[in-house]
Each structure stands twice: as C-alpha cells, then as structure tokens.
Amino acid sequence: MVTATNLRKTYGPITAVEDVSFEIKKGELFGLLGPNGAGKSTTIGMLVGAVNPDSGAVDLKNQGPPTLPKNRQLVGLAPQSLALYDELTAKENLQFYGAIYGLSAERLKDRVEWCLTFAGLNDRANHLVKTFSGGMKRRVNMAAALIHEPELVLFDEPTVGVDPQSRNYIFDSIQALKEGGTTILYTTHYMEEAQRLCDRVAIMDKGKILALDTVDGLLQKYGGTSVLTAELMDPEMVAPVGATIDGSHLRMETREPLKDLASLSDSGAKFKTLRIDRPDLESVFLSLTGRSLRD
Image (cartoon, rainbow, N blue to C red; front, side):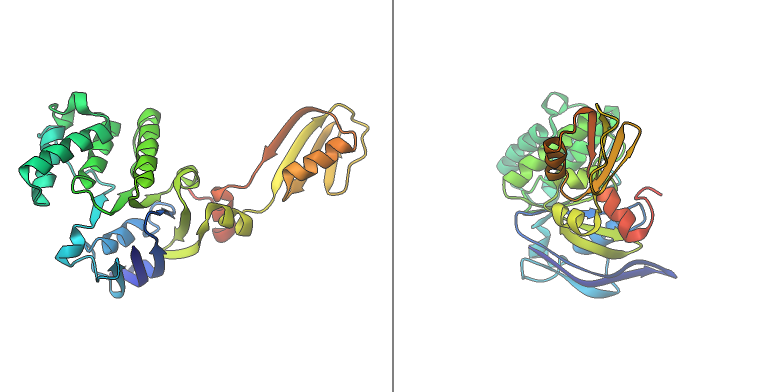
C-alpha cells in the first residue's frame, strides 16, 4: 500500500528525517513509535505530499507519489494539531471537508452521518466545536480524515491531551477501522498504545528508524528477559539455578517465565505472592537508545 524509500528531510542545520525506509501492507495497522521530535510528523508530511523530501521517494499502491491527484483520494490525515474550525459545528466541519473532496450531496449526507456515528457525537452534531472537550475534538478530527472513505488513514498522535474515556473510545474505533480493511499508520510516543494496537512497529529516534518488526519480534530481539519475583512460604528453600533468594524473597530472570514457574512449583516451592514483569516496548527503546522513551 505504501513504500517509503530513503526519505531525508532537513530544516537548515537540523536533520529531521534521515534515510527512512519502510513498507506498509494493505490492511495493516503500522506504528511509528518514538519521542517528541523523533521525526514522526515530518515523515507523515512526506507520506501525504505536504512536505517535499530532500531525497528519497514515496509510492502509493504502485501508482506514484502522494502528490498525484488520483492518489490524494486514497489518503486521509488526522494531524496532531487539530484541523477544525471552532466557529462551525461538528456537522459543518465534516460537510466542509467532504465538499473539498468533491462528494456529491447524497453521498456527503451519508458520510457525515457515518462519521458522526464513528466519533460517537450524533447528539452533538449541531454544537459548535469550540464547546467540545479535547477528546471530542480529537474524535471529530479523526472523523474528518475519514469523510471520503480513504484506503489509507494516517493518525498522528491522536490521543494527545485526551481523557482516558476518549482514549479507549479512540482505540476501539481504530480497531473497528482495521477490521473493516482500512490501512492505518499510527504515530505515538506512548509505548503501551503501540503495543496494544499495532501489527508492526517502527521505532524512531533522532530522525532514524532503529528497528522495525512485530511487537513480539521486537520484544524477542531487544526486550531482554522477564523477571519473576515471589515471596516464598518456606524461607529455607535452596535457590534453584538462575534464581537468587534473599530471606523469603525469590528473584529470577527468565526468557520462559511460565515454564520456569512450573519448574519451581514442581520442585516444591510454595508462594505467598508472585509477580512476573515481562519486557515491553519501553525496554526495547531503552535497549536501542540507552535512554527512556520519555527522557
């Protein structure tokens, strides 16, 4: 669906994106994970044709760059900065964007109704956007990107500044889009979002892609071991191979926590408390960069 090849973009002395290449498959939910300033939004700008790369190329569906008129209809973008008119209602905002895409009157009516349902805002359709909460504005912003039924949608940090309820609504809406066959690019600096939603994730930092794989693949390659900790019923238990016991507290690093837990139980270990901490994408980012995702 999307092929980005050796993209590079500089702004004066600052290199925003350096030699970025990846492919997004049709129907895939592809994540760009990285801290603020990693180059995610600049990359999105090049993918939709809003930013001209200094070098490299973007191809959509093997039919050329995103700047071609026939390709613009393929793409919907919900930018990080809200692209809404506060003095218009939610319905009027959607009608405006639908008219830009040249939707006929009948189709525009149907699409506006669908988008309002998607955003969960049918009851607020005729309310001014300036009266909406941050989460409601985000949902209208996302809906506007879908007004023309694009095959590819790019959501740039769609949960920034939203409340937990709206965040969960957004997650459910994105999952429903994917199940309907829409190809999605999702950028975020929240590792738990990428881990929850994405089929594959590209980890980006300082304008470069450091790793790209499925979440499980990234965890396997870069996440390190799981840590099993427990408070033992028998503080006199001899520590098994690979574990340490301090008083009644056992600690074990393991790549197969469930298997090793079963072995401990088979050896007679009884637990007052038990906890397994598995590696996550934060661990992956730390392994790749030596720092936290939110440093």
